[in-house]
Length: 282
Image 1 (cartoon, one colour):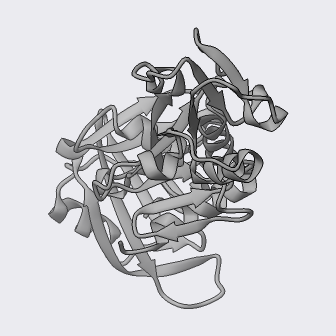
Image 2: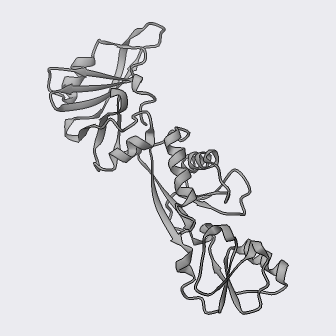
Image 3: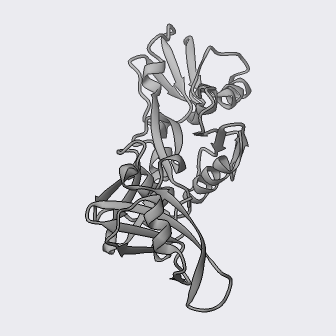
């Protein structure tokens, strides 16, 4: 995967052609610093990346006993961007997706240098409902990835379901939303379930199964319902996806390719859910 730290990556200028044979001649019989696991070799604009294995021992410099060429110049792009934190896997992955199929060497923040390979990138679909805006889940995903609590090259892709669009086909004169704080509005007579209003006319509930159960408990009758639970609205397309659901009280649940977090989710829970989602083989 990605180097554990830019300290593990040695950058070295060379004067030979960066071929498999040339690299083998360069590393054969050499020693590497104890922290060095990878070389970024450069000859002019040509760059190659090599992983090295050192002999066991406690010396600061140990013999290289094996090596593996990870990328040759034809497959490498060099990017200089001082805004990129090369120690953040997600930040590196976002750079890499702009150069499909290439191994990306980045000189980023503080002049640190590291690299990411295309097969390492992990794509995460994030589905949330709005309003309120911005989507809470999208904000917390960004915070989790920026924090370093997710040490994976994850690139998020955001999908928002506008609940105002879901009520476009409602036929009843009134509509009931779960919570007044949601920011949901309608041209129809509008009620909010958390206010326990008196509802005399025919109405449609825009809510999840729990909202329907609350309505039945309060009013002792059924009501037409428009589904708004992100878990229920989520496509079953095999993609790794993160959603919210009020049936999860704390932490997270993993169901196949779906990570489900509470409605009142924290950054820590989002990070834990992403890590767990990509640790599964589903």
